Each structure stands twice: as structure tokens, then as C-alpha cells.
Length: 135
Ligand code: AMP
Ligand code: ZN
Image (cartoon, rainbow, N blue to C red):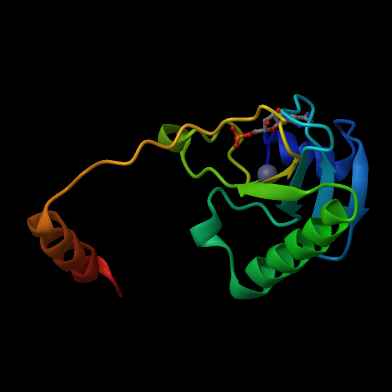
């Protein structure tokens, strides 16, 4: 895809710190890490959001994400997988990517997550609304 930073990384037009690649996926260090070893897993085929991926690509991306997750756990206590879709959700690069963020005790990383209190009506109405759109 023309003008896509990550497609340019895949062709070598833009340099990257490659960690791993296979036929369908590529893994490299995030250039502005929020933790030591912060990596990005991407499909070699260009898709904007994760819901668009064809099943074979989606399987390959999950398989690689698991492989990298297992690797992270060999020398870290845990990891987060973060995946943003569309600018509203914080997606800056419009090529599907999974952030893998190694975690350790007292690493001072905080993801803001504020729970909202709702009554029973919310759960009923929301369930009905979402299911109406399910295909
Ligand atoms: P997101 O906000 O989910 O779209 O995240 C995009 C990520 O891509 C950010 O964490 C950036 O630091 C990272 N990034 C952008 N350009 C590059 C690059 N050329 N090499 C490595 N990481 C990059
Ligand atoms: Zn791309």
C-alpha cells in the first residue's frame, strides 16, 4: 500500500529493528517504546483494521503474537497486547498492528481504565442493540 509506513518497513524502504518474520507476519521493535522490548506484530498483507483481515492472515498474526508472548515470558513477568483500530481509538498507523508490551512488577506503566456504573436497563438495551448488528 502506497504511503503506508509499515508497508515501507516491509519492503525495506524504511529501516526497522526486525525481531522475527515468517511468510505472513513481521515483528519489530517499536521506535518509541513505552517499555523495554515493546514490539509490534504486523501482517505482511496490508489491512487497516483487525476485523478486515482474511482468516489465514488473522490466524498467522495470532500465532506469531503467541510466539512472541511466550518469548517475552522467558525474561519478563507478563505482557499486554494492545491493538488500536481507527484514529478515534488511538490508531496512528493505518496498517494492523499488535503492540506487545513486556510487564514487570513496579514498572510504573498505567493504562487508564475507568469503569462506569450502569443499571439493569443498560445491559438489556445494549445487548439488544449489539445483537441487532451481528451477522
Ligand atoms: P498506534 O497508535 O497503535 O497506531 O501505534 C503506532 C506505533 O507505531 C507507535 O507506538 C509508534 O511508536 C510506532 N511506529 C511508528 N513509526 C514507526 C517506525 N518507523 N518504526 C517502528 N515503530 C514505529
Ligand atoms: Zn501497510
